[in-house]
Amino acid sequence: MEDSTLKSPEEMTFGEALAELEGIVGSLEGGQLELETSLERYERGVALLRSLQTKLSEAQQKVTTLIGELEVDDTE
Amino acid sequence: MAQERALTVKEAMSAAKSALESVHVRVIGEVSEFNDKPGYKAAYFSIGDGQATMPCMMWRDQYQASGVQLRCGVLVELSGVFSAYVPKGRMQFMVRSLQLAGEGVLRMQVAEVARRLEAEGLMRSDRKRVLPRFPQRLAVVTSPRGKAIHDVIRTLRRRYPLAELLVAGVQVEGVGAPEALVHGLRVAAEAKPDVILLVRGGGSYEDLMPFNAEQVARAVSRSPIPVVTGIGHEPDTSIADMVSDLRASTPTAAAEAVSPSIDEMHSEVESLGRHLGKALSHRLEGAQHDVRRLAERPAFSDPRVIIGSLSQRLDLVSIALNGALPGRLERDEQRLQFARESMQRTGSHLLDRPREKFAVSAARLHDLSPLAILGRGYAVCFASDGRTVIKQAAELSAGDRVHVRVAHGHIGAVVEETGE
Image 1 (tube, each protein chain N blue to C red):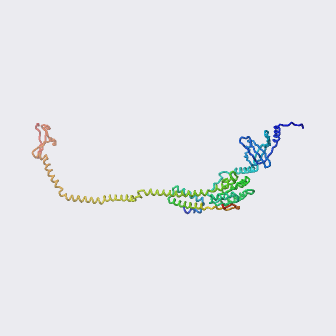
Image 2 (image 1 turned 45 degrees about the vertical axis):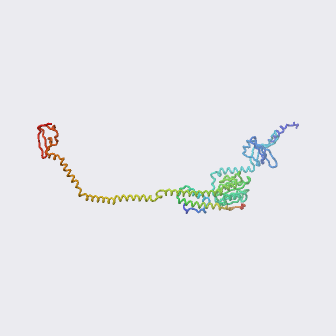
Image 3 (image 1 turned 180 degrees about the horizontal axis):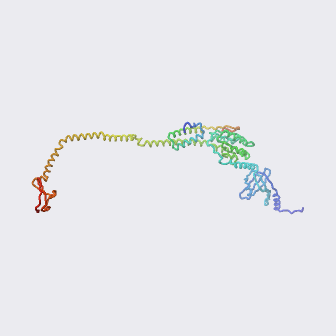
């Protein structure tokens, strides 16, 4: 995992970021990594974690109408 | 015509029964007063149309063979004959065959479509696609107004505001609804969402018929995007449900099926965060442990051990070398010097004592010499071999030759006689 090939967490979908974070936690828990790699992965994991938390707390449902006129009480 | 005698009641009722049983009819009516106690030999019910009521009975084995589940309000088509129950004087319709009418007919048509699609394999479980766990875009095909779209939006807003919701609002009932649904599915798929929801609120069987349309079922089954259905209420199952990738019982259930709960996601992310921290500190502790273990090795705890043992060896070698070379030379030289001096010192007196001892020894040697004894006038007598000293007279006999040694020279002699 080279830095140059990694997407910025903000560019990733929630699912992608979560899957990568799960992978990182798994590899860290495996304990087979070089210490330097462990630290790199950890940093990456923290960045992913922050991005995921932000996504979750700032999520606002966006509703787009493809066809038809939507009649929904949006005030709820 | 002769005056006939009056009949007994039983005869009259039996005549009526015979007359009634010649009347075969087919009749459609709504079921009421359905009574099907397990102990009875027959199922009893009435059908009516709002203007008249007709009591009916059907033998249990025939009823069960019909495969129809009667309940109040169901429209049925019956065929059979009228009859009378003589003991009670009651007229009733004896049902020979029974089928659902109206909705019942629709159900049969639907069942036929379902059979055809199933035969084509469109309902096979291996056709059902796995839904993405965290969809980014959800499309919903439903009526743009009404409870269904409201339920979906409310559910997603509560559970999963992460996804963008695309709404294809279409006509969902009445003539033209199947075409509208197919169009809605196509428009939704073109927007390339992760999942399509095909939903509709509850309604009558007829209301839900568009979701049983073959063209809708085929549009669902060939959709490039996984389709989740939530049509009507819990017991309603449409053909669209059967061919979809996932069937949910209601629009709300469909929305829940495609959306992970944001609360669960929060706790999942938090749990991952904890695991991440724990995993790293575990890794760090491991590294620290390794380093500490190495650091505690004598090599690191006291660097002099390495240098110390080396320099000690060096010292030892050096000492050995010193001992072996210059020290030894020096010592040898000293010893040599000492020896030389000592020799020089003692050399002159070296012969004094031996000389004295020699004088004494020589004198003593002289005293012990047999020659000295002979000098004093003694003689030694040897046997004829010249070596054996004669110490007893018996060793000789008369006539034996002997040699006699005296101080100066010797004498050869012959024994004349011997005596004790």
